[in-house]
Amino acid sequence: MRKIMVVEDDPDILEMLTTWLGDAGYETVACEDGMQAIECFEGGGFDLVLLDLMLPKIDGFGVCEWIRKRSNLPIIMLTALDGEAEQLRGYELKIDDYVTKPFSVPVLLQKIRAILRRYESNPSQANVLNYRDLALDLDAYTARVNGRDIELTPREFECMRELVQNQGRVMTYQMLINRIWNYDYFGDDRVIYSHIKNLRRKLGTDYIQTVRGVGYRVEKI
Image (tube, rainbow, N blue to C red; front, side, top):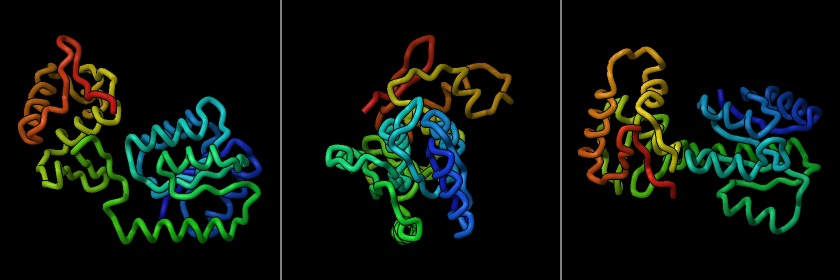
């Protein structure tokens, strides 16, 4: 079953969308503000995002920019703002469609089906995290550098994923251990050092910066 995240702060529209999508055979997760959307997205497993623009805490542009740094997952913006500037900004953030309110739900459902078919026919567009010459397929757990397949262990992949998803931010040894080993690891920091060393060797390009005595980061792009 396809899974759609619906981000909308109007409770009536949110209920309408989740009901129609459920009746159409989609699993839905409802979010009422931008911060909640980011938290839900980190759980993964979505096939498409319906994203309102005027949201509390973090607006739709902010949520879209955050997602686009991590995934090529299809995004449809739903908004009452129909100005050219807003639409252009949305498409600059690589959204798949811009739908203004009020909208026809049956037409929206057709748009969703068409976008999902397009991504299904070209899986390379779906849920891939890109960083410079590196592409991480978050579903298949595969990595490519300049189109060349790189064999990573699951832990190496997850370590690189965490760094790329947090570009510009220093990830401490403990943060990486907690996120990758889910608090189940009681050894020392050398396990992270070993994984970083292997990543640098396998990728052939040193994307990872060492922050001595603290942890690691990748440069924000």
